[in-house]
Length: 307
Image (cartoon, rainbow, N blue to C red; front, side, top):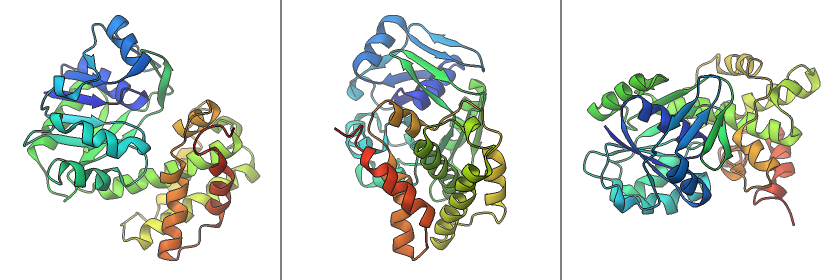
């Protein structure tokens, strides 16, 4: 199977390296110092699941040099969706599956006008990983899972084939007929975690044992879930309870990627996470008082460290 990974950061780098180790023909689309390091020294993924060193690593900054692929894992930041989507048109053939693995809930619908509805699937990545230095990805914890499926809910041969590649790669994967529900389940958790942890600038281990601090999670998760249900998403009745329980089990040192970006002074995905909750709440008439405060407090940092 020919796979292109667009954006070789924590998500794309970790999953792409595992797929390559499992036997897939993987090419990474990257740029800058990260690309240079991968070309010269290969790509390293370090973590408790075991280290991977792809040497040599197939990497380029030119989509036309790759040509049509079976699967394109679309892993760029949310603010780059449209520009990167237009750039990868040379990768898309008649049967190519473009699987966006962005945070948030709207990457697929943003890609469809650019690449066509037949090319785009839905996808969810569940992993904690980040670029430690050019050419090196560091994973926190052992959890590593992909959930993907056709947006119309029908089973497909390309979904089944990619699922087989994931199994060979050794990480958990689900080829689902309800990808919209999966997207929203992750969104409820990630929008909350990215907001609360970024607001406090502390990892989960410093937050979950203080009842007053943990109440931020307890108030935020139901607000997002209410927005999703108001939008017609069939979220399980016990979702809030399950996600709060999961929050208490994350590795103590773990932080969402948005918090890592905040601490590094980088641009944030805030408008598509906490900001999206606030915007949809207003649109649908669902109160989001906790999110209103968290979004307002983080908004000055959305474009990087304030001057």
